[in-house]
Image 1 (cartoon, one colour):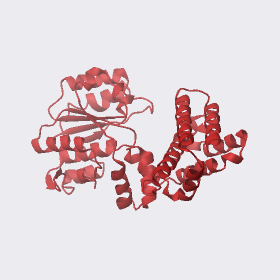
Image 2 (cartoon, one colour):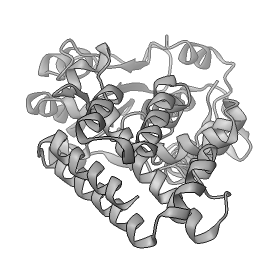
Image 3 (cartoon, one colour):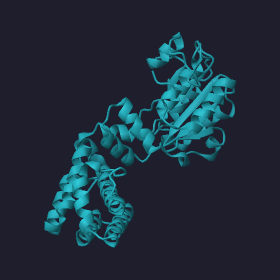
Image 4 (spheres, helix red, strand yellow):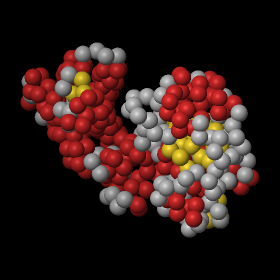
Length: 348
C-alpha cells in the first residue's frame, strides 16, 4: 500500500502534491517528467488515490489516503471507475482516436462516485501532434471535476500550448545514499551490492531495483573486470571476441542491438570501466576502502594501484570518455572500443 511516505526523495514534488491535498486547490492538468523507471506512474497513482480518498488522514507529517475506504480499496486494486489509465493500440504512438475516444469524449460524463475524474496518460511523449491538439481542446475548457496526469520521459515532445496549460513536476535524481538505504532496508540487498546498484542507477530508483535483481548485470560486471585484468596477455582480436561475448544481445533486446551488440549492455560496460578506474584513482589517493564502489574487487584494485601512475589512470579515463563520445556520435562501435582497450592496456 504505497503512500507519500514511501516515495524516496522527490521532496519538491511531494510538497506540491501535499499542498494540493491540504488546500483542495487541484489543477486540471499535471505533467510528471522523468526517466523511464524513475517512478512516475508510482507517484501518479499515490496522488490519484489520495485525491479520491474519502477519509484522508495525517500520517508521519503527510496527508495520506486511508487505504481502507471504498475508494482506496478500488484504487489499490487498479479498479477505480474514476481513475482511468489511457492505453493505446499502437505501441509506438498515441493517436488522435485514442485521445478522442478515451478522454475527450469521456470527460462529459461526470464522476461515478468521486469528487474527481482522473485520467493518467503514461508515455505521454508518444502522443502525435493530432492527439495533442485533441487533448488541447479539453485543456482549454476542462470540466471542474477532471484531473489529467501526463507522464513523460521527454518534456520537449509536447506542443508549447500543452505545457503552458499544465503544472510541470520534474522528477529529480534520487541521492545514492537514499537508494542504497532503500535497497538494504526494503529489499534486503547486501551493502556493497546496494552501493553498486545505487551508483550505476544515477538517481533512478527503478534502474537500481532492476540491477539488484538482475544476475546478468553481475555477470557483465565480473566479466568486464576480468577482461581488464587480462588485457596485458591479449591480442586485439582476443579482446574484441571477449567484448562481443559480454555484450551479445538477449532475445528480448535483439531489436535495440547494433552490429551484434546490446546497446543497454554497452552502456553498463562503459559505466563498469569508468567506475572501476574511478575506484582505482580513489584508492591510490586515499588507501581507504570506505568509498569504493567495487569494494568486492579490493584485491585487484590494490594490485593495480601499485603498478599504475596517476597520469596513466587519468589517460585511461580520458580514453574512455573519448570512446563514449565516439559511440554516441555513431562512429564505428568496434573501432571506438578497440582504441579504448588499447589505451587501457598501454597505461595499465
